[in-house]
Length: 400
Image 1 (tube, rainbow, N blue to C red):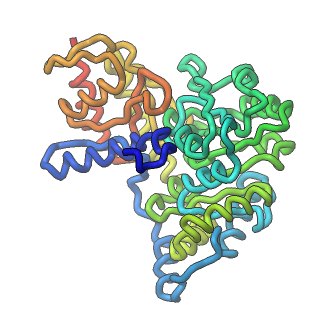
Image 2 (cartoon, one colour):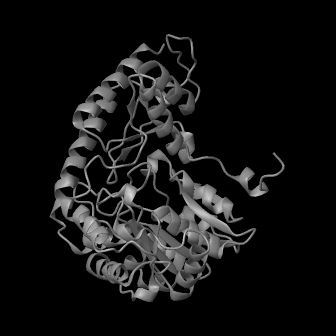
Image 3 (cartoon, one colour):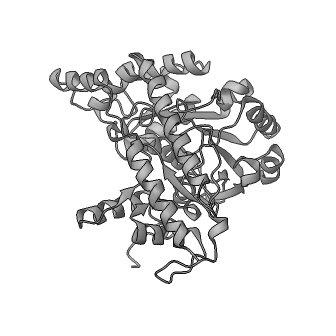
């Protein structure tokens, strides 16, 4: 349709959203479907945070706020960065948006010009490349192979940098693999970036509080203070605090960049939901003990899923350091055929057959930039995970 923008042709709909929606539609039709596509904790938002939202409604805090966040939330974010990350920001360096995705989107819209390059390690969150394309930029994909633990090396980063590189987009623990970079591994990457002062760093820290087996989270500007003036440190309350629907993301960075992002937001969504902002204040300032309790539950679920999938001939599932995803390889199943006569030549074909023949919805690996894999979100109950893994095992056993 020629009426539509040519920019739209550069992007595709989010595969994770599409899989979740398809699973919901099939359930509504009466199909027995287990959805493992959505990256969303199954816990309720903690009671004290819900109460803060209700109190905000009762107090009439339901009007417009400053475009990029109320002062109280910006102060809470500054305190969080100082307390947990050793990063000192003032409120003028803080941006609050309608979810973590809008933080990244605003930054790209505010900085990218045609021909600018953004280095993105793969596997990557599905929205990264498309947001870059919407900003007229060019995604430069650097593949973190399975033998590297789905991480990239300093040499790979160095080789990807050109005079046109504007951003290096970093995510640890990662969506979709759960892979995390140790402090030493991250320092090796920041050493490269210190040699290229024209490259800025966008660090997506959304899974900061979901790290297992003693893995210690760290963020680039924390590891290398020399990058502080060209780093946007991004986070949010969605994953750690089970507040996906509240839609609050935030970032800390240089004042000129934050001001530019504020200008973008003032002409798009304006302020995030006022009620959600007050709930986020309580999330960041209030009790934090439940985070460790939830983390223990997620680690148990991770171990359950990893063990079950590794017991399936043809599947190989690494043990992730964090987040709530696993990213098993189906390399051992390629070329096989289902009882329905479908030949499995790609991870997308595997995911389609798994949904239609076994009723399990997963996201195929090509959506994340590295195949042949699929992503499972284990942010659901043990009972559901056991049933889903049983169905996956039974489906794989039928392939010939």
